[in-house]
Each structure stands twice: as structure tokens, then as C-alpha cells.
Image (cartoon, rainbow, N blue to C red):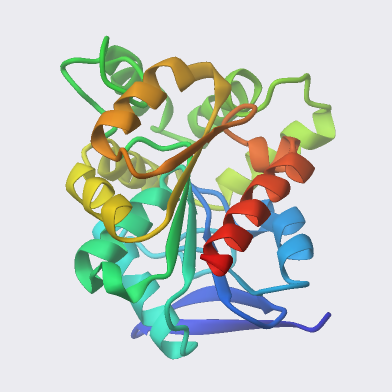
Length: 276
């Protein structure tokens, strides 16, 4: 299977790393907060056999240009538009993970829902914070989110400690080996802490409920959510996006920990929508 790696200039001096593998209908994977295209290795290997599979390092992530401006999800949505235009990708399936879902929703806000074939949204509410946090599906309690920003994303050690705790407590459901934990943390640390703080605040204060509701009425939409907050997420999504399909699997990093099951779920969705 041939793999092509390239860099797409989204504005003068700022390039995004893009990897393409396979041919067929395009499926585009967008990683989450400070993570890189490498997290989707198992998905690329699997889906590139049947699809044109594209993974992207967002601005200031991974092998893309580190820049002190544009580290917000409005800009990330614009960047995605430019990448897909440069690659001549039409009507893709967009797969966002975590804050990568915000990039997907922002892309829809800017480009319109007619520009995509279908949506897969991995474990991210369209609005991270709520005063009704006992009822709504949110990223976490307000005090916890404030503490993460104030106490951890102030230096590299804080970012390292934050990701280490998040990986062990939220991302997976088993004990990580030291090698696995090191790899996860090093993924995040490719984005400097001062940029991570900008992305964190941008993500927490985003509100894409309108896009989430409208898109689920117009195109096939699948949410894959972690087990630990499914009790809140399912009724929330049933009210906001009743036409969307919902699957529950593992922790926040389920497509890595439970890659075979995840690929089965996603593959079934892609086949159903192709047949429909």
C-alpha cells in the first residue's frame, strides 16, 4: 500500500503535515488536543485497504509548523478547508476525535453541511462547559477544568503531569506500560505548553450545538462515546441530535486501546452509508 506524505501551506510560513494512504472514497481523521496523526495508525492500516485514508497534524501539532498564532478551533476549521481544497478532496467522511470534533464542526460552520458525506464524532460534546453540568454532557466539572488550565498548562512539567494523569484515568481502561505512557505523553509535548493552553481554552469555550444538531439531520452521523460518561451523553445526544447513531466503547482513547472493535464499528457505519 503506497503512502504519500506531504506538507500543505495554509498561510505563508505555516505548513500542515498530511499523510494519504489508499484509494476510494475519502475518510479524513482529525486528532484531538495536542495529539498527532500517529494515534490513528491502526485506522490507517485498516481503512486504507478500501478508502482514501487521510490523517492530518493540525497547526502546532506533531510535524506541522509550531506557530504562536491561530491556535484556536476557528482557525483549525479554516486550515482543514485549505488542506482539503489543496488535496482536491470532495465530500469526505470526516472523523474527529476529542477537540478534533471542534475542527469538524467549525469546518461545517464555514463550508456548509453539503461539503461532506458523513460525520463520525469520537467522544466530544459540542459544548464543553455548562452551568447545568449535573444534567448536560460536558468535559468535566467547571472547577476541574479551571484547575487544569490554571495549575497544569503553565509549563512543560505541568502539561506532562496533566496528560499523564488524563491518560491513566480517562483515556484507557487498563494499566499502561511505561513505554505506552511515555509515547502518549510525548505525543502531547510536541505542542508547547503555552500553545496547549490556548487550545485548551479555545476548546472549553466553544459551542457547536447548532452545528451538531443541524448536521445530524442532514448527513449520516455517528457518535462513538466512552463508557464512563455514556449515562450523560446518550440522553443529551438523543435530545440534541436524535437522528445520529450512538455507539459506546472503552475510554477516551478507545480507537487505540480497542482498535479492532472500533474499526468494526466504523467500518459498519461506512458500509451502511455507502449502501444507503
